[in-house]
Length: 456
Image (cartoon, rainbow, N blue to C red; front, side):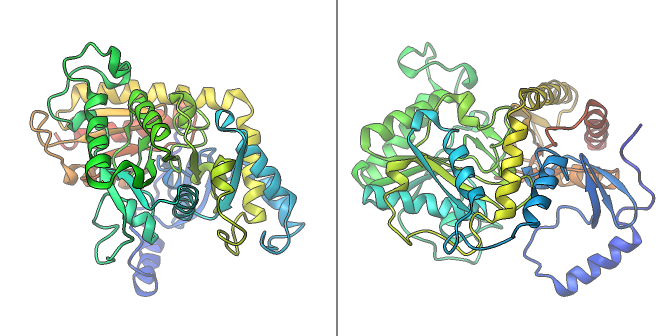
């Protein structure tokens, strides 16, 4: 039985009225991907105030990985709400926070002993990760990457690569932030081979090793523009999220790990969007077999409640003294309860197995789309975190932002919530709930297929 049910044009009359009120009373700053106004949601379906039901391929930007209103999460939040909703960890501690830190520390066994700091948002966690790294090393410089997105607070904006709309008009930004090229195989000039199977550079048979070339560019920036002895941290997304769902090859990440070890630099993985099953493993670093010094988590960490974390080597976390980090709402009890329920769910191997199966279905279907539609330049991703890049010409690879916007609009007008991303705004990203059944997945992909056909 189809899950998409449209009773009105999109947006419907009640949604139109509420959108008028939104324009009148709400800051125009938050982006409007769709004109849909939600009434309620369950699993993979969002129902609007006009009674239209949409399949959700966005998961609230990769947050509700276990689906909307996961029963275990809802029960945990309700039970905690019956006890207390706030004391502030700075004033009266509570077991939920402490036990959650213990569980998150266990996610990085190769970095043990570990400690955790909880915050509210991904950007806030990124800011604090930089604090930990700077205090630990006594250095200031931070190297981030092209395509990188780390949030909208000031240090996070400085680390973020894309200027518009995230940074326009907000300068000046914090100093001592430098940028290196991200390993984007599709847009790196003149390389050969498959970055997914690239061996360590010393063994690489290719005339031009992609991973080695990108790493050499990074190393030259560190040496020539900064000086290795001045670098406090390197921060990278294992899969560039807002930058276009570009996976970083494991050999490249291993080169970064070795370089950071050699020069006493803190390696930070921003796993805000890649965490909690999004790539088919609990953290992307697990399947890439590269251990950072600090990992930043949020989004799927609490399946919809505001919670983030910085977890990593205790000697780095302990570098900041009493009162150096914190916040009134950091590690809210309701959010901690939700996160415990999320971790409980992932203890069942079937959850990640299903996520990986979704990833394979998406990969095969998107590759089939690429063979059919000339507007697709590349399909890519890691596990169920997948995307297609739209171009005006497959030879020139000219980004086609207008096509991506047209597909997103066609999708919501036909009952599918879908989002674009990418440095050029031309990438369609698939952030389906990791609990989605085959029928819903195929129904949503049929809408995407029809949307792409409408461009031909």
